[in-house]
Length: 114
Image (cartoon, rainbow, N blue to C red; front, top):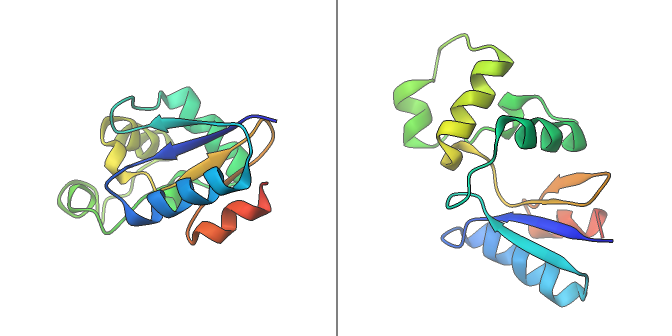
């Protein structure tokens, strides 16, 4: 089974998740989603695998969120569009396979998928 980690190299939690994946010996690919942003369809697929609403995947502590979105009544489509336009708003790391996904916070959550 193939795994994908949606990774931000500047994030310690994301680096921890990547190390866990490397140590697992599983076949995986790295997608640096800040350099190669997700499409809305890709984001929707990940949300479905996570069984999350868009708001559950938003990093509400990010400056972009606080300055542009906090306190606004946004639809799920508007939230997804915000994450597509500002990928820093997406919680990290996310690891997925064909059927499921997890947010690796803490990194040990990734073991549930492996």
